Amino acid sequence: MNEFIAEWAGPIFVVIGLSLFFTAFYFRHQSKKLSHALSTLYQLNQSVNLDALDFFDQAWPILKNVGCLQMNANIEWFGEHKSIQFGLDQPSKTHKQTFKVDREDMRFEFVIYLERQANASESLAGLVIKTFINVLEQDLVLKQAEILTSQKRLERYQLFVQHEIKNIAQFIQLLSEQVQTVSEPLAQQRLLERLKQTLPIMAQRAQKTVQQMQQPLAESFQNRSYELKALIEETLRMYDLQASVTGDAITQLPRPLVLEVFKNVLGNFRDHQVCEAPLAIEVLTDDINKWVVVQISSACLEDQSKIRSERLFEPFWTTSESGMGLGLFLARELLKQHSGQIEFTKTNNAFGFAITLPGLLE
Amino acid sequence: MTIKPQILLVDDDPALRGMLSFSLELAGYSVTEASSRVVAINVLKSQLFQVVLLDMGMPPNEHTPEEGVAVLNWLQQQHIATKVIVLTGQQADDTAYLALKHGAFDFLEKPTTSEALLMSVKRALLFYAQESALKQKEGVQKFQLDASLGEGVKSIRNQAEEKLVRQVLADTEFNVYETARRLGLKRENVYYLIKKYQLQRIENSNDSL
Image 1: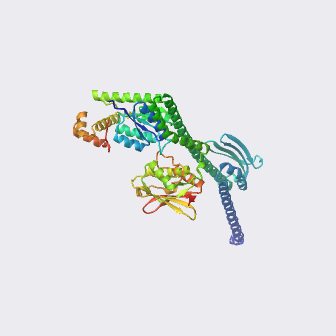
Image 2: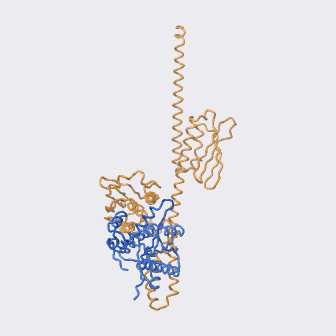
Image 3: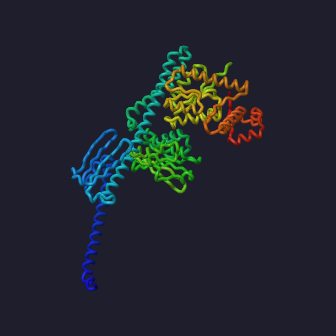
């Protein structure tokens, strides 16, 4: 017996050692392959700007590399239908898995054919497919949120035009009736005096409405310079907010855009401020880079403890029951269009926002 | 000499405000203008109006009825007798529902005619005058109560009690002795109700009607 062990022990250990070596090698290889496949999927998603359709169209080579043989998909995209096949027709002895990912008007239904050994749920292919589906779902959620934001913007724009047009129509209606009914010379004189005051305002309003209808983003206001301090003070009056404004700068950025930014930012202070301390607003200029930095600070320290700064600019995130959680998000988006930026700032004594605007004029 | 009926016109559009006030002045009314919720409430604190003509969408919330609702709520609390006619360009169904819920007397959608506007003002003044007469002659105060069905009668009783005490206190310029006399209560009871409903005298009140 001892002789048998002495004779075979060596080869047995060699076999076991080799098996362990190849197993370790196999797992290391699979792990590297998995890691590579997953990072390629994420990179692809970034390169297509998180667009679900582009991601789906371009992900096939990665799936193929991990053992997928064929993918047949039916895509519904806002009422449009598309059928697509990746890979060649496969013999019937392959395994197939069916998936569905959808959000409102966006739906992906697809069947993936796999090699027999790739079919296990924890296989390399299984893990990559799972990640592929997760990324696709995330892209759809993002798309859904983008659509909602656009809809809100459009609704806002429609409301603006509707409000203005109804006011103009009301003005014309009253004017027409008054011109017809006022007959006494004294009343006619009073009407004339009234019209001298009101008609220029209404003409200006009508012009503004037409400009909005032609160019909702109000690009036509570009190249007209104005003082930033006056705009900030106008917004403060609008919201009945107390603040000390120091410094000033002249800018050429579209006035409605900048006004919208300050309305969104200062609106947050109006809606969430719990103490009476006035805001401190400082307009600083950087003559070298031609920037204007507007620092808005609040000393309401009890507010500060409630703020979750990492979520402040997230769309649809709000602590207010009536708010939509879009104010700061929209402010940031509007500023981005013109290479501006907004940041949350915090010191021991105050918190607030620093708004950086390009286009400082001498 | 007849005192002209007092109307407060609240609208953020200065041109439209000018034309509306001209129509009302031509019809023989005395018009005061306000451009926002804040200005309107300040004016209402210093002067009594029989009718308020109210735009619902004003800065900073031009596209929602928030500002108009705030004025309606203030009037419901402080000057319940004042009749409010809502004139707005916002979504008619939704805004009319809100206006009614917050105590508006009438609702007109922009653009409206002078005739419809003056008819509504006339009706509001008639109701104001008749309710005042009812109060003077028979000591009857009319209230609008929002009764939630299925929640018992306690909340309705409290609501009526609060509105009644609030109104009589406003009528007597917060004279507790006179309020107690008019309500047929002891002064201690009036103090108790003032505390219970946290009633406060309106600052800068200088009623002129």
